[in-house]
Image (cartoon, rainbow, N blue to C red; front, side, top):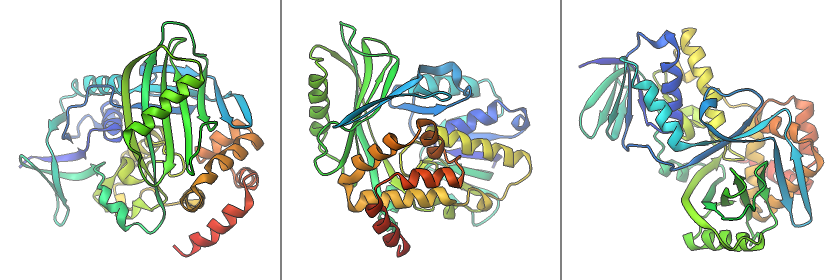
Amino acid sequence: MKIYDYIICGGGAAGLQLAYAMATDSFFDDKQILIIEKHQKNTNDRTWCFWEKESNVLEEIVTKKWKQILFKDPSETLELPLTPYIYKMILSEDFYRLIHNTISTKSNIEFVLDTVFNIDETSSPVIVTTEKTSYASQKVFSSIFDLSELKNIQKPVLQQHFIGWFVETKEPVFNENTATFMDFSIPQKGNTRFMYVLPTSKTKALIEYTLFSEKLLPEIEYENAIKSYLDELGITSYHICEKEKGSIPMTAHNFYTKNTENVLNIGTAGGFTKASTGYTFKSSQRKISTIIQNLKEGKTNFSTYFKPDRFLWYDAILLEVLAKENEKGQTVFSEMFRKNDIEKILKFLDEKTTRPEELKIINSLPKMPFIKAFFRNLTT
């Protein structure tokens, strides 16, 4: 049996970003790498957005950039220049095409369509059993996430769930220079609900109805909310070009405890999702850069990677608030955006702030819900 240096189980965002990082770094040219993915992915099945100051390693496939965002609640509308940050969008179809075109030029990287059933590391090398066969590898990365794991997590588990429509109008109705980051002016209905609008031109935009809550809604409820929102904007004549939907687990569970010496969980399965916001793409890029650097430095014991820090604790407190008082989300985010500089907010969400900067943001939030959440969190 051929023994690979690395097997990547799962060819989604995290797995393909890792494969791309290896394919574009000469250090890995003599390493045998296998990617196993059960589905052929080549369509616009999702959209990724993120903010950053610098050029991205995937800059060539960035579809749209915004230098300003809009935050809105029932009482106020804030137009916020992002300098020095830029908000960026990548479409999955472009992402899949670039990654697969790149790895297809590398003779040391293989890609197979198969379903992983088991990863056995009781002996060396690690054995990955699939529906069709078995593979052996010195090291394995897995983005395969078992949703049943969430049932056994003690800390609160919410979902960031949404449906989005890519719409096109005949008349210019969108401000293509501003992305609506969160619009809380819509009915909350006892939850944390907001609209997210990403205009790619004056006549095209992605409009998403998003919730941070425990339970998903019937599909018709998301779609009716989008229709009502478009009506409120005075947009009654439009064509729905594409639809997308998703549900991202939001939990401060320490996924890093699952990592072993030779198997590293990545993506949502590895805790790469920012627990309090659901953002994963840029977080994955940062963590994959760390993985690549560690491997090049000979740090190959995966059980030492990615230990929890104070930012996971901050996320845990916010999720505790939203789990017990889900309707408070609008107030929490409104206070945050109203009382803090947007640059500091994005820096905080990127987990790059200093403790004094973090204290200022925390002090701007409603006190009582967080005090109660703090003490509840001590017991879980």
